Length: 509
Image 1 (cartoon, one colour):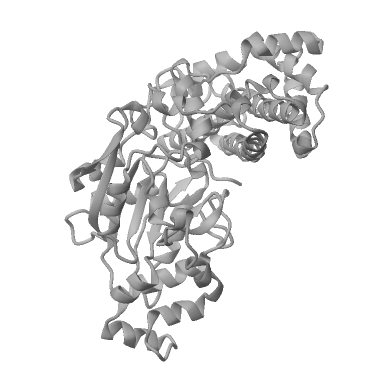
Image 2: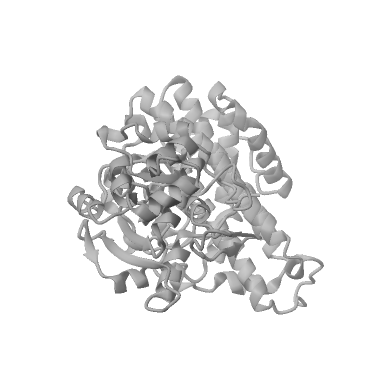
């Protein structure tokens, strides 16, 4: 089961980011194919998000099993919290599918197979939204108290009052059924091998919609259907969220050159870093943003270059430790190379634009070696230094190299090592052991699983700061200011408050 976490909805949008968006029909054929292929994969992942958020909610049997309208017991606090987990996760993936659907509004401007593939991508996203929203609402309506709970505003997350009522209005609506009828009619005329793999789940979603009675409008001709869709198009379901949804859909991989932290600031930060440092990064296009709660969605580990590691780890104490690990030379680089020969060789390969790799991080592409110029090319970033010995930092780097090359863990399952999410890489690199004090990072239960959101690292830092329990030293914080179009160097006190920001804080400024 995929872990689905939270979304915070802001009351604003990023006009600058939207202006940079290149519509699908304006890309060349290679660019169109690349974006469509990426979006098709995302539909499957986001659909699974909706499915499992609904499944998790349904398993809260005290809320939804055998309830009688008007007689359901008042939910306890812990039951409300579990319901909120499912609700916020659901909204996160719904908004992501909105973004994908909206980005394929102009499918009819394309030609041939690209046209069919773009239409099918948008239709698949629409079906997932429609099907699981009907199921989610049907489940929630079993308990009369749920309506009140889900319609409450949550200011710290940016959720306005009446969110659930808007969801019901949108999907229990004749206009949505008409949209379904039009798309279903056109889908019969499409034929594209690139989207064939989606057919089983699309057929399943369509069948559920029809059985619910929400897709039984008149059967449209393809010509009438095309006219309806060309003049309507899909939009985000929060009126104030249209910009955020469009921005979110296009910037996850396409807004790479207009981030708020400057090259000079990246270089300034680099000069302060040492092997073993932990970075928290707010980088808007990361796929891993979807499903992760809070202001800080991403974490990475600074490992440095071989030269930087030699300078840092060349001490008599380290040499003795390396020899105790079985490397007679006492050279940590030799130990690292002997333990992870293949990954060590990969780490020596230059990254984008010839930059040396100094970072290891888990991204949608998997656990990868990247350059600091890539990792911190972002909107906000903070560097934290574990208050640990060099031998423990060396152990963490050895572990991190061991994990390199493994896939990104869309299941967010900390119990397995075969796939890793970004914070899982940091967590397991510094995990305490019999001979290692390590970092005691908190885990948080989300939809039935324990995991570590990056935002929780910032929260723990705030709570432990200035106490004997502190595990990190603050190094530097570059805070993105969207309206000013830049990041500014901020204080430790400002960083300590950052974990309380809404998820889309940078857009709401």
